[in-house]
Image (tube, rainbow, N blue to C red):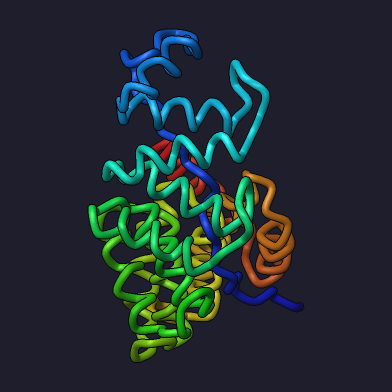
Length: 256
């Protein structure tokens, strides 16, 4: 029987374009009103207009225009615009790809407490993109984001403790962060938590709990979780499998 290993990649967030209601925005966007207010220097309108161009909502999709309006809002200190601008520089959409510029904008948003930017800054230090690779700095930013409840950062922090990267290896601490992420529905954390129970790392070895977490991840279509669930069943009694299935149903009822 082959149980697949942990998912150990890190994920950079996609753009999160927050849109404020009330300023050139009702149930549908008023592009002309948005543009007028944005040209007058309204930071919310600039952010909204950038979001419209980024999404192609009410206008033709145009990343360069998105960059233009996000930049104006970002220069006024809007953390969401700073974050979105960082993503566009990271991905090279509307601008030449520039990790250093991405770092600059993520940092400005992160220093204002924006959890998505804190997580992304952690990823960048983890990978060494636009900055020297620095695992301790990555952990610093992952932790700031994780402590605000950001599921991906909690997962990343769990990985660092799991692998002993930038910190002393600590399976109990890894389980703690995987669990908080898993409870928010983050599928890779659910999968890895199943492996911790299967291997008895940071927790007592428990095939019932391993099956439960793989069953939860499998419910979202996670192929490795589906495979591992089938494999661990070969080591379980029928009553244990029934218990695991019951626990999974109860867990999903509670957390979804």
